[in-house]
Length: 70
Image 1 (cartoon, one colour):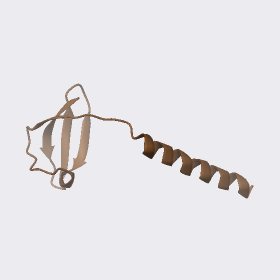
Image 2 (spheres, helix red, strand yellow):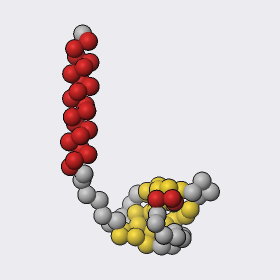
Image 3 (cartoon, one colour):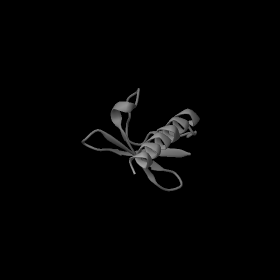
Image 4 (cartoon, one colour):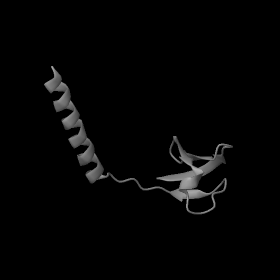
């Protein structure tokens, strides 16, 4: 996926326009380099299996605790 920096808002938000549609809003402080309007990025997303498993475990515990109250 490719995206271009459309603008940088006053609040320090970088607005990326995705090549095939959509927008992404990211805080400027998350970039480790100077960001400028017109810069292009190659963006890769991948699932975080460990984070998903941990979240599911927390949900199960919350569900169990909620059911035990009734």
